[in-house]
Image (cartoon, rainbow, N blue to C red; front, side):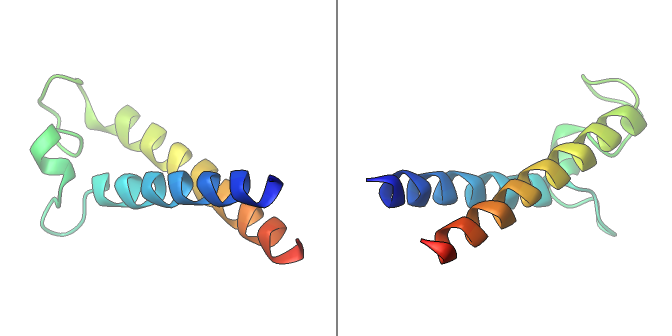
Length: 75
């Protein structure tokens, strides 16, 4: 039962990490350029605060993903 719950959490975390990584702006502004994350203009205002929050959320979800992976390996 617990293993099934952790597997579902693992799938959700992996999708979230993939989405967050794709939102980061790269050389070509990537997917984040479509939402105005990397630029100074757009519906979210200045890009620096949004980029910092995006970095924080990516680190949090990646850490949760790693911890969940270790727990799944121990079960």
